[in-house]
Length: 526
Image (cartoon, rainbow, N blue to C red; front, side, top):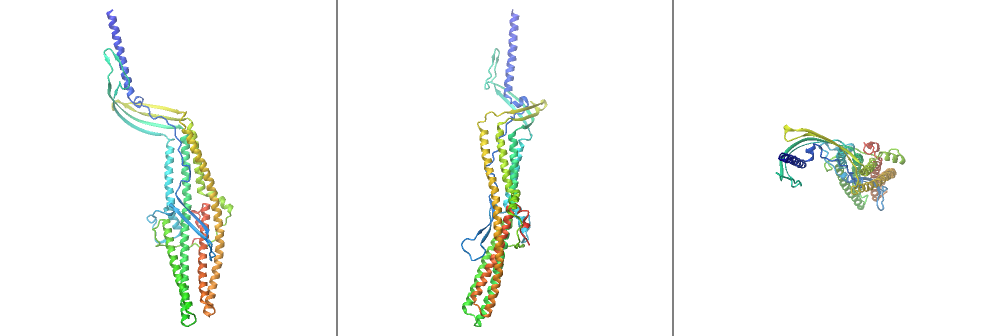
């Protein structure tokens, strides 16, 4: 009987010790992180979120270049009724220095000016940086779809309070310790995660590629704008220089007539009034020349700013762009070519496609996603007791309720698609208006050149005949001064009309999307 009692007591103690060891082991395992217990990856598969786009796709450079011809306000005695302008604003009005990479000897041709503008004008430089940023964003979006491999090493020293985690045990001769440990382990592990199926991430990447393409097309369009700005500024310098030369010639003529009148006065052939009138004409031409020289210097400084040259007028232009007929093309052919070639229209289409892909990504947030995670490494208490462990797991994530996030993303994406579709339609209408306006300006400038050339011939003949009549004593000095003023006005009309015609051809080249590549086709450079 006593032996049986002793055996029962011994069995109870063994069971008690076994239970106690199990409890302690459970507590230790509870305290050790999951990746140390199983050697598995602790990264849970998460479905991607849609990448929100700005509402408008017109998020490029601020500023622009606009060329056009407007009627002169009020009444004028000149046959020139057009006011050609090339307005440059924002980033297109500035540039980085070009002399370090492209040495400058003091003579500037139109081709050289355009090359410097394309390389250093801030309109193209800034969009080049935007392309680099879009490329980076596209790589980030692609990284979600590619394998992600990471490595980590951890060394842990730990003690655990059993009472804190709610473990209490009592038995005869045993008591639960308040703290177990310390114990340590180390873990060296490589972890691999791979997205197998995530349509949201896939459409995010496709959308980023379209945004990159839109930025690249916008950069091409910026090249056309820079060509328009630089060429327009170069033409303004040519016109300003021609005005100065015309004014200088008129001043020389006025001085010659003054000397002639003064000599006739000495011989009593003309009154003092005619001498005074000739002197006033000389002063008028001197003032006109001074004003035009000031304008020429400003135009040269403006051209230097667009091309990265020092902001001064201490250089010479080497090309002249005389009147030449525009390329033979109909309005319908020009419209078709513009719709096919214009980079800004293609960029607007790419922006719309990006918005549509983002809308698909938002809708795909409600679909399941699948990912695979794997890891392999060694875990142990010291380097000599490391054991290799690995885990491979697949996670299928099924969205059930996300607080309405997917619906909100869809609503935002739909608004973006609607906005960019309207912008695409507006861009197409804007291109059509630019083509038609360029043709109207070209027709008006062509007619004006013809009239100005005829007027110039007539005023030259009139001045010559009036001078002969004055020398013969059958005409007054007033008629000679009036003829001289008419000639000066006719020469300025011809200069302005040729400038207006060249600006109209530039506008046509830009409206067709060919300004950067076909400049010599539209301007007869000498």
